[in-house]
Image (cartoon, rainbow, N blue to C red):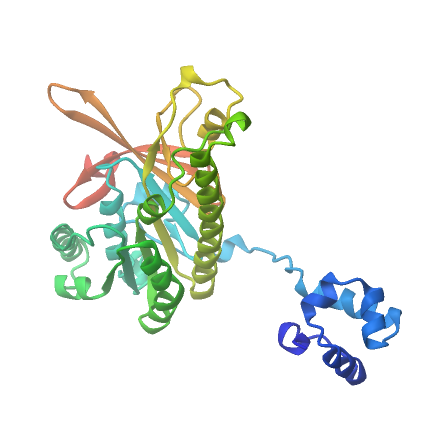
Length: 368
């Protein structure tokens, strides 16, 4: 009988507990079996069984938590304008996603956050360390130290009393590389919680989440027409989709728990996937309706959407989209933007940004 381990707060009569133990009934049995069958097996009165079941149900139901938004802490992104549209910067205790096409500055932005989280609290930082988990080529140390050098230079100009050197900035970012989904799960489930306790972590970056899920689960052959369900390829794809969804829900719950428990920010970088064209579907199709939650506005249509679908979108607190558009093919000029798609802290909004070797900044900041 596992009642005391499962629900330690429940006060149970000793005779009742002994009777349940002799009948080899677990807490799960009490919740799933008919109370009459339990009475026959244990000789316990029906009223007592029903009272115990009610107590277990009440104990297992998650308690509603009153959220105090005023107590949420933030750390700076390194740019005042970006901090303003995010209502203060990067929030602690939450999971944020940064999504965009290749070359939009996702990794650059996260490396910048690995630096700003180390700042003293009076400058908007946390004076904490960062963990950077890579699923592909690893952290680009050349780019990171180039950014750190510029970061150190700016600090010495504006805050000469702050003593920070480039080597110290690099030593406080712990890098991990995982080569497949199994290793990624092991690192996130076992190694990451220990590292967060030992090394005073304020930021965890996962770059990127889609790599191993897309390699492990083949859902590219899934169609939503019921007349094709007999196709073995589609059946296999549906099984992969179910398994992938299950793993994503577990991962999302685990990351949210870690973020809240350790009061740190967890940022997940996501890739984009191709989407079928607008003229090949109706307004009521799944793919068309889904786009409104992916980051494009009412007057535009993008053939790129965040990977991993709605399941993953429902497991993150906020989504930030980095955009890049070609203004002139001849001069190769580009317009870059940062868009808040959804967030509990701020309204959806967008600002123009510049991507340089020093980091990601709003155009208003770089033009000053």
